[in-house]
Amino acid sequence: MRGRRLEGTGWREALAVALLAAAVGLGPFLPILLSREDAGSTAMARAGKAGSGPLAPDAPLQDDAPLQDDAGLPEIVTPDEMPDGWVIRPPAGYRILALVLSRERYRFDTLSAVSPLDLMFGWGPISDPEVADQLDFSQGYRFGYFSSDGKSPLPFAEILSSASNVHLIPASPGVREDLLDLDVGDLVELSGWLVDVEGPQGDRWKTSLVRTDGGAGACEILFVAEVKVTAR
Image (cartoon, rainbow, N blue to C red; front, side):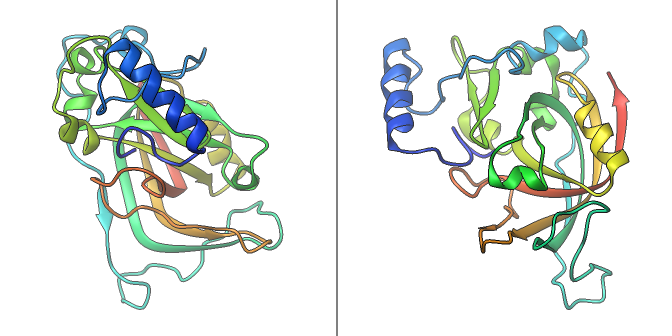
């Protein structure tokens, strides 16, 4: 994720968020929740696991080896079904065990040609149902958002480093089906590569490689090779 929002929409939306946040007293550090039917509001109520402690205590594992290193990173990864003209390069291997906090399906933006879904993930303290249930999560325009109706259960910096909005690129039709089947409250393990993407018209998207950034460009782009659902 990193921060109040993860990928940008424009100054009008930003101004509206700032004014609305001030109106409800959230202050500058917690973004206003965009109301959506599939948003992750009270996610743990849906998960039905309150009081169990963190479900995914560890941060994602990332292999930062450069492409030319002998760590086994491919120079280019290609989904089984990919439109012509797309190039996907992995700067790092990646594995994440996390709780799904929110999901957003994309069909019409440019990146949706290879990435049909964004998921907001939480690990560490955010994967504790009692903590996550005190925060509201939502997504839109390739951003992730979180807010609190009252006092935040965690410091802003800790939320920032324990949750993420991730653009997902399935490696195969089967992986695509598995990803689209995921829902808020699922505990899931994904493995694959963090990737930089270049589209046929020269559009480029670079993945985040750290867990503490915020704003535009702070989302991970994950080429997903394997999906494992640990709990639903």
